[in-house]
Length: 183
Image (tube, rainbow, N blue to C red; front, side, top):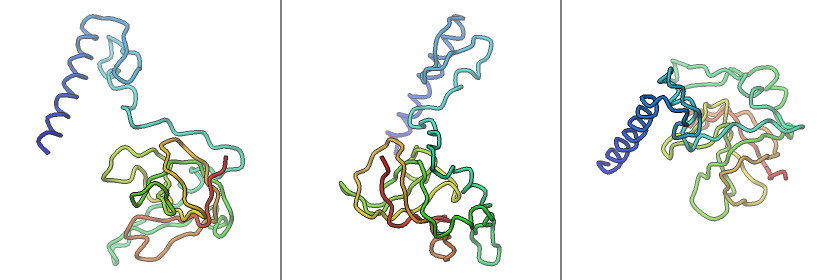
């Protein structure tokens, strides 16, 4: 843990010292993530996403945009002490239908091939937490095991809306079943 903290402090120091030197020199340079640094705007040092946060891919033709699934509100039930979905009519209309989504795989078990994955709108950025809200991710049961990739992929499967306490405890609102990777 101490090594991680030291690495983090050293990394931030390099970014800050290098960025401040760039600002002080008034040079037309780039920050560590490749964005231009504006000498008049110190915030431009951090204008771009750091590595590990890939751009969100465009929704391909025929796929359901994540914006539709995001219409489900994330409500809190104080009686049960857990979150629950507030289903939007547009989302309810997709229940039980075959849909396509573009997103990123997160394996739920180790191995070369995966029959079950977490599928998210955003790429993973931390090994300890999901990168998306419950309305921006789905648990996926693949028809055939697939190899992990960190590139965005399109999956097609049947959409289930989850309402069991076990699913909600995990922060899961959606499941795709019999899913396959679409080329």
